Image 1: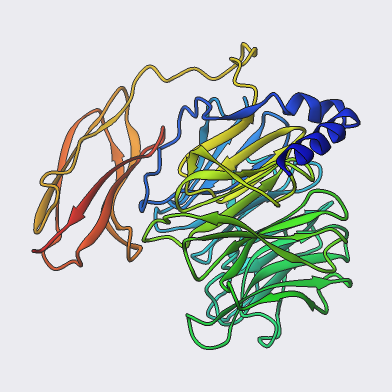
Image 2: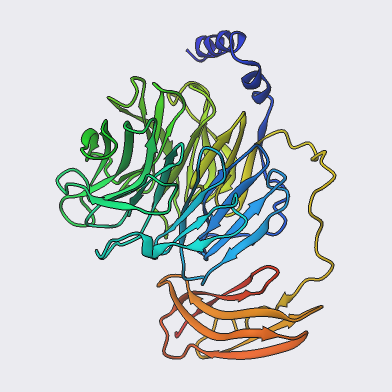
Length: 450
């Protein structure tokens, strides 16, 4: 059976476009990623990524940061740093690459009008007074029209739409008998689109995974996929072409790895299992999915490695790369995926450009937290080097997403020490977040009162 499948796959390659033939010699690897903070398991990740061109892309993180690369993820420049408690979940750009929207799980929405160089808070442009106002998990676009959905854990699903490149927004609420929480959205034309998520029908353990379709720009929706056996949520959607589409399942059973697939333009969907895995105890298993073409694709999530298929999701192998995978982004024949860092599928040859950004001649330094683990007062020390810089120092409870401000203001070069009292704070995982004009830094520690 495997021999026949391999021969069939080779026959397909004979008639494949040149770009796909070249892609078969590519592989997953970690680019330089200079300027990024590696996100370790349980401590956050880069939730979404969007490439305006083959080398120019924008990345958003769960710690309130927006980065941009000009050389295919070799170097990243910090473009926006909000509070680390601002959880960026989604980023999308218009067809011309000029306008960008970045959504959060904490109610802030940002817009860029200059290809991601600067970002303005446009939260007040979304006239929504509900409890989930401005919580945008997924974004899509057609031309200069933007669409958004939120949020994955809600009890009332939101659909956002902007007809004027993100300047003003309309908000509608979807029927709770169809869906209660939304994660992702894909629009194929101004009127035809799909959203994915779940319907909570018996409390948090009773999740029906769903896909909805609209043919009138979001005015009405029809359920085209539903499952309560695996349950959970349909986390990410991708249309490889107008007929072939895939989606990842974030199941209730965290060890289960599976996807959905459509071969008729999203009218009907089928479940395909990929295997089992030991998921992170703090995560929900599989989330990211990306297909290079109708045959080759990958699944990943809150666990070590990825699953790879070469026959459209019928059979799967495992790869020892990637942790906390969330968003795959395909441009030309190159794939990027946002995770605990950024991974890339393509050639790992050194970049030929000579105008790459160079490393700064100095680096500030944040020292490890003392003591660690801590039960009371902790000591925080850092160095500011070379010149005065605007500085934000905060402690963040990763588990509860609570922020404790310590200082905010300009600091001259020198050595600084502060303390934070965790005596009455809950046990768990924490970080020190040191933000400067140059680049933010983090140190992780735990609070343990035993």
